Length: 278
Image 1: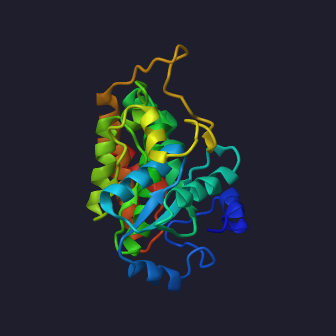
Image 2: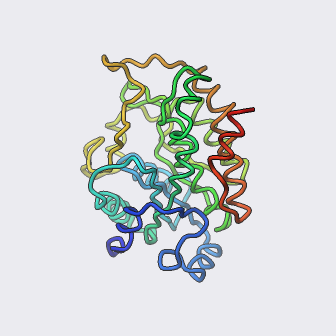
């Protein structure tokens, strides 16, 4: 398998609106038609170590024979773009019996902004907190739903885990993961979380079967750890997270994705403002 197209790095750099209008040099109509008629195809959320392990585990459990790697940008990443291509390469090397297709890069900074950026003050006033991590992960799953639907509602594989060697990440608590799954299911798309109950990072290494240090060789986020106190503690409650998701984030996301699936680019901020004001 060849490395990622050099044009992908420029596409990632520019971070244009790219959810339903994926440029033909990246995904031609002919290639999309091939995907629609391909059995055993699943989409993979490419991020870092866990995402590749999740794909490996999903192939073993579900019998997928074709994988479509996708990277969704958010606007807060930093680090070497080459790490994304290296993750895809590792995936292909780990699963020689599976056809790993060329990487697609997509996203919508306006979508991300509507959930996590523009209304920070109003969200803090309403919910008593704001962590962009929750809305960001909801965005990262949901921004792929329109592509999945257009390709015949292929499953999406994610590397989310409820526990990380005893550490809690509020964007990956069970109540949040269940809502990510449920929202995808509303559009007829299965969001697969094969690592959901894997607690030990060493087990991830066993699944991978190749050297890859946890948290390394992947893009980072400038907002990482924002919900932790100076001492590293987490004071947010499950109830706060659920209320934010149920009364704001999921409602906004549902309406935005519905527009995309219908072939329209929505007014993301207008939707968020309306939901927040209701």
